[in-house]
Length: 352
Ligand SMILES: Cc1cc2nc3c(=O)[nH]c(=O)nc-3n(C[C@H](O)[C@H](O)[C@H](O)COP(=O)(O)O)c2cc1C
Image (cartoon, rainbow, N blue to C red; front, side, top):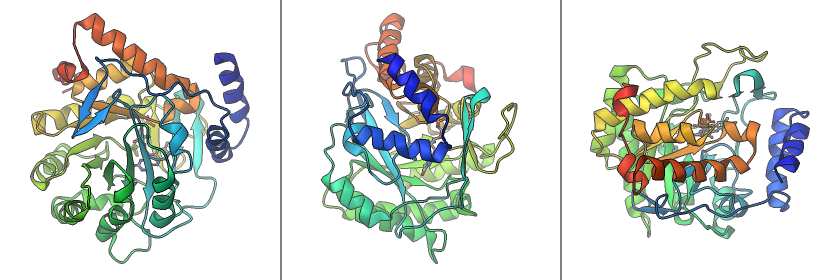
């Protein structure tokens, strides 16, 4: 099976990355990809902001922006799946090309700019999809919106009834000035609107805030303060970076957000800082450059209650997900932890 996966990946990498991405989604929907089901053991079972996860390894936002493969993705080994970003109205995003592989760096640069079918179409697909593990929606804002802050609540109002959690994404580098919404006053107002909408849902869902890895220490302190006071249920650290440190690949100077291995240390440091600043009061989800069980383990040691990944799958395929979950289980056993929760933050000092 691994051989078939390697051959499939090699063939996909001959294509332009966005075409390859679309084909990988089709292959999932057509049943061409083996799906192990969610990997789970008593050690891996994780409670995150009221959600019961079979394991703490999630799919990060941006892979299935339009909820086209929700069913298969919830049987692919992940403990939870994030769909989107969705914006209130459909929008085309930036002109192509807008996705670049950096193979020598095990990284990707993207500047999609929230291309998506719009919250209505995405909510309709989510409503029809079977959800074997918790599924969330990544909330975004339309580029041309007159009130971007209000867009997040609008998407939540539309898609909220069909998901198990939602993420406020004010950290994408690909919509100009979006990250200004991470500032103290703007963020507090935005989160208040989203929480009010959430509280009005028939089945209120946990709301997470996703932050950029490029915040200064002072900005991070502000985010921690606002997040703690706002009534949100957790923070996802982090989105892609604008940094281009130490890259070798041909496309290293492309504009957009960088993800994958070169993001790992930077995002893990932000996670550990945030864990210290929030003192374990807010659950944290660690994302950025995870490509192995050891990487996932480091995120948990740095303060993450759960993790997400995307870019490593571009290079290693979907079978990586089950490998990471099983590897984590073995690591927990070896280190003498009865579950993930016991290990959260156990190595935080090393990342500060
Ligand atoms: C092609 C692509 C599209 C993405 N789209 C989104 C998005 O719509 N919303 C979001 O919050 N993050 C988005 N991300 C960021 C990922 O969710 C994740 O935070 C980041 O890639 C770091 O994780 P990784 O190194 O495992 O990929 C995107 C990433 C990539 C590579």
